[in-house]
Image: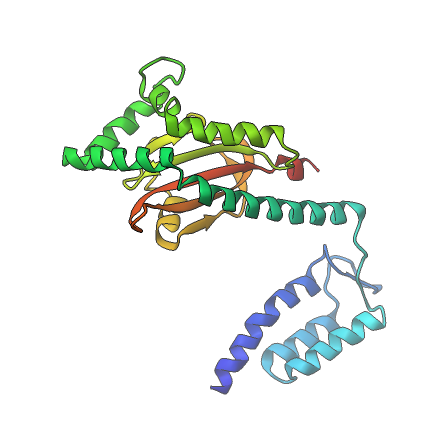
Length: 261
């Protein structure tokens, strides 16, 4: 039991070691080569890892180094503060957009489109094969050609709702705008979308699976191929009025104002 407690404590302190030894966060006031970690730092860490000194003693050593300016902690730059402010703003807007999306998925247009789509796919008896066939044709489907697969999925009442949300967002003072919103049915096939997505089938994507399993998925951010921007996205599980799973909504939020800065 004691060993387990120690292991948990060591896991907790790993990020501290990373920060202490990270060149980007701390500098050493020493005549030694800047590319090397001073031997006394290595010794202190070694004693702690081997259990020769306690966690409390190790922290006291680090505190002593900082207080006596053996380890120097640089102050935040203006860019650091701006980045933190932007990240706080992003988190606030993501939360707001998630709450907005929870209301959107319960709108009659979205619910009805999903119910009809699920019934249609289930009635075929071979929805997996049907989705595979459509997915193969998806890339060549022109969203500007009437009655094409992509055109019909972009121009329907459910998609009109998604675009109206995006249009309102574009006119708002939001710093982080929607780049894309789309909805799939319970089988992972697209049903409604603001723009043509990169794929028709979505149930093979981790975000789709996580949203179905956990109710919500939040990404760590990165380049979104479908929207063509650096983005942070989220996905929500959609239920009908009886609590049955009927689909997933994904929203992509443009965060390039942060990456630019």
